[in-house]
Picture 1 (cartoon, rainbow, N blue to C red):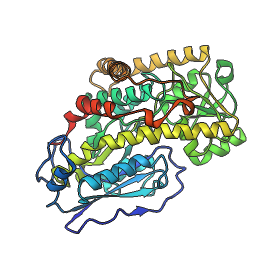
Picture 2 (cartoon, one colour):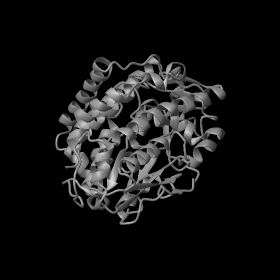
Picture 3 (cartoon, rainbow, N blue to C red):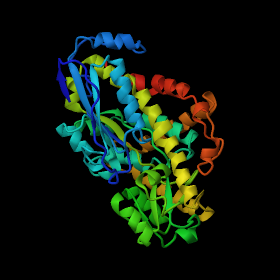
Length: 430
């Protein structure tokens, strides 16, 4: 991050680099602290107009932040980052400028925490399952992220809100990130259900048993072993060839990840659960602590208050547009989207109960029993809010999503307003 008195400039971009090393999106540069420390200056009331933010930041020095995305300019994996950057810049009157590095040009996903700490990035995505020993509490949430409904709209909305609420309600989780020099703006950001992209249909226990599957973390290893599969670790660069040659049979991933990483042409048979399912791949949107502390208060408030833009961008583009692109690739390559067979569902349900018991007993949390109970209750509560009070619904499943999904027919404003009032507003810098 840089702060000076120069006039606002145009956002500069770092050239796109082929993003095969990571399947998840964003990273960026900013600075913050849990006790609300800032560089001072006037604050802005919640719900204030754009002009109020511009006025509050008029006397501040120019702030330049670095944020990266795994995708290319305009790609669905980049739109949430681009829209967030554009909105922050506009609402600050150009005082806060965000530079975007495309293609994970600054740091791969595994290095983002260190890049936030050493200043290479200001704001970025932290994936706890890549380093569970470093983030045991965050990883506990990742382990039980199979909770909730697994469907494109309702499931994604209820878990976005439910897990985010649970994360903020777990001090050990946010403190764990802060201890690594990261201020979590969103300790849980929108993500999608994980299934298995396979070279041939594998839904029943007899088809899954004995097959080899590429997994992202230890919890997926435990779950796939319960299905009789052999989990293996491979980099994204190796996956296409491994699937093509038959070295592995499947890859555990979200549907859109298969399209983005480019392996659906050789693994177009996708299996995903609706109730018993694999754990999701959660991530946090965080800001380097020292950068946050150097920001004027109004800049901190603006970055927080426009998280709605980032969340909506991830939902509409990073997930839902990504699913439609993936389904096109599945169809073009003669594949299909199916659910697990009855025995496989029973095996997944049994191992997931074991995982819940393990998290209840973990030493990483002061009270694992309460953590599991409260997280489950939070997700259930938000299911009722999403489907009952707000009236969202799935008109089908993943397989026919492209047929029934219409962006214009899903108004996310009620959901985002409720998420702000019930979860995010309490976290606002003041």
